[in-house]
Length: 241
Image 1 (cartoon, rainbow, N blue to C red):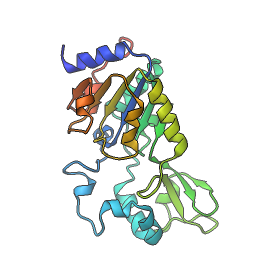
Image 2: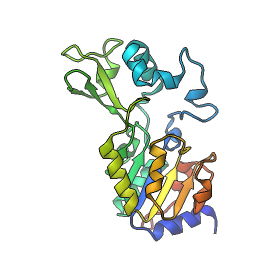
Image 3: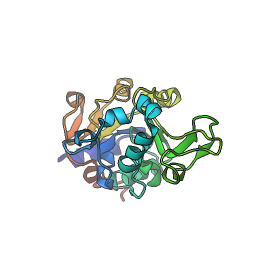
Image 4: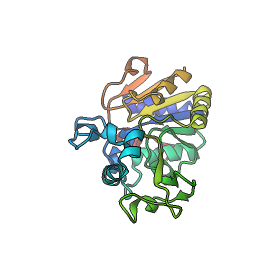
């Protein structure tokens, strides 16, 4: 039995699957990741990307932050790939109970998934830091270099920047889902970003790990597949489809 067949067998026997994913889930949609050899963190900028995408940098240099954010973080024309679509199919079939994602691109929802826990927020939600008024993404892309609310406050994306805490309610929901899962599929993540990676401690069952590069949890995996997440999930049949 090859690895995809083994994965198919695990899925067929499971009724409460949780998927935990990172940037590698969206690379096949044309969105670059951060930590691979040709990823964002290995490119040369005036400031390190980790610094630019921090709360303190946003507060001190908002114009530079937005120049980088619009150019390197917003991929508004990206479309869901085979991984996003297959996970949405599994949810519709009643087997997948939640997607826990570190991504901010909204592609799981675009593929049709309903229960998506966005650990790091979403580019599609934005708000005024003064009055709280909400804005669609065009509130960021249109107008002045520093996007402004009608009250004069800065509009910022509802994403978690470096130095900021993750949403405690989203974390609690993720912990609950993992505690109730009978299968955890982890894909497209190095499992090196905390506290997100620490969520795996709330799950004790069989672990499927699909990632091109090694992770700290490889030895724990019941099934380890070092291939593209989209290529692997794209071969899975859901309810005979």
